[in-house]
Length: 226
Figure 1: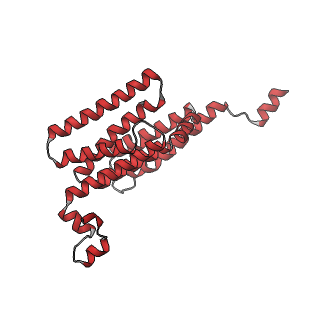
Figure 2: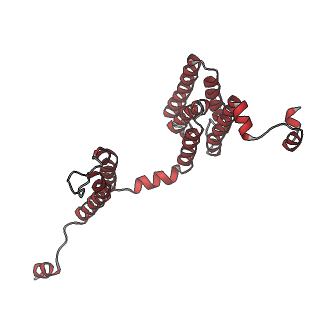
Figure 3: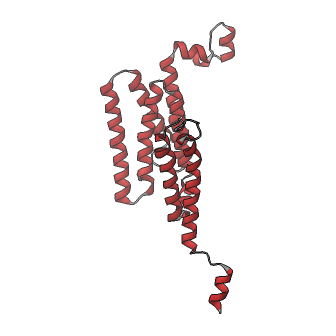
């Protein structure tokens, strides 16, 4: 009966149907519905790609994870995760045996990730769950484009990207962000902020020059021709 009453009539009847009221008084229901919605998002892409695990499977996986969290039973949560991992492993093994691309590793990992999204939402980490679900869906949709982009990269470009990642995310955070001299002119943290892109561009230039060979001046080229 409640499902057949329009929201406008509920509001006129004095029933508070605002999102804040629902979040405050029915947090578990909100988490379950939210987890199901994110699972439906992930499953829709798999359904569109004609994979064996589609909208219903992914919706059930995320909802199951949220239910296990809401039930506050760690054993059930671990059991559900183990079942999803086993099912994903069976899918991947079947794909390797039969050569069917529908059962390869991407769908198996996506199922495990969907369970993780349901766990996050069940614990109340809505933003984190949304970010992971959206990024995963984005990667799944652009699979062909990403594969084509990766195949077009040369070895030197990949090496330059790795060097930049090491400088920006490993070395730079370790630099002290404070002046080392009495005048405050030398700050390794600020210098590293500018040196990381410069070093990456320099390595890329070096790679390109090594690939094309050393530059020859016009005078030397003319003398060599004579």
